[in-house]
Length: 93
Image (cartoon, rainbow, N blue to C red; front, side, top):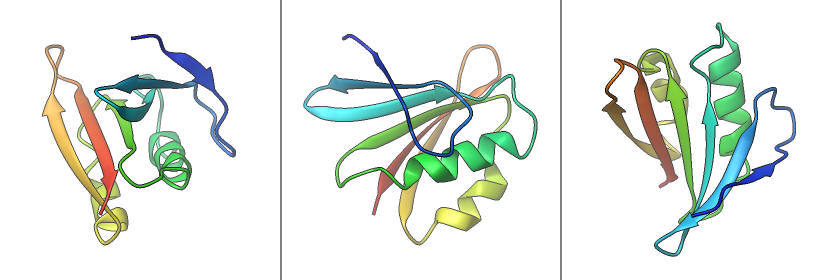
């Protein structure tokens, strides 16, 4: 799987696009950021998602305040990763 750096309007982080099992993923790492940068980058990136595409974000904590803002439009799955950080995968409902 090869990741391609992409530009997403109004974001401040590096985003990468790749395909896995026929699904397009966009991925970013917000673990070194401070609020509100992780939430803002996530919200801007969610705007570009098409049906069946996914957004994967890495955070230094679970972004629970974000969930209330998107719950009517996106589903999410949070996983705690080895170092105690979180990997959250978002999908349009």
